[in-house]
Image (cartoon, rainbow, N blue to C red; front, side, top):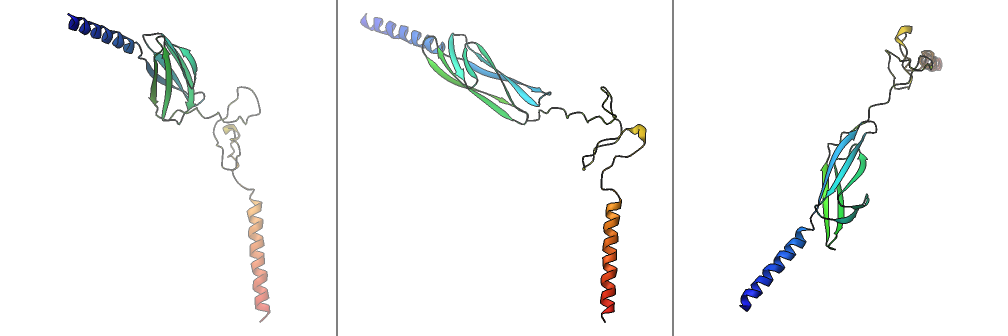
Length: 176
């Protein structure tokens, strides 16, 4: 009879301990979305459990269940969140959630500056911005954009070089 009572007590303790252990589970999951206005990923972390508790992560403190949001650079390829939870039965657990990202979240390029004179709502057509930083010109003027030095500067330099060469050649021939 004593053995039967001992087995029953051990079985009951096993059930109580298993129940306490199962009351200490939680999950950390994340979803991502590209914010094309800023070129950043928006990560929404969900910390879920069937049991009561409180916890903290690098994003702040929370009560279960919880949602936390963060933004990361658009070239990020992986982001993780480490979470520490203390359940109402004083059991403490740590979990990590990870979200894999493509690393290709980009904001659209800014619109080109208007060159038609500062009127709100005007647009430019044709032309392009060259390496010298000149702006685009309107197609209605029939002109190409200016992308280099004025023509007289290289012509002047060429004239100086040719003239210097002729002077040096005459001096050499005259000294013989």
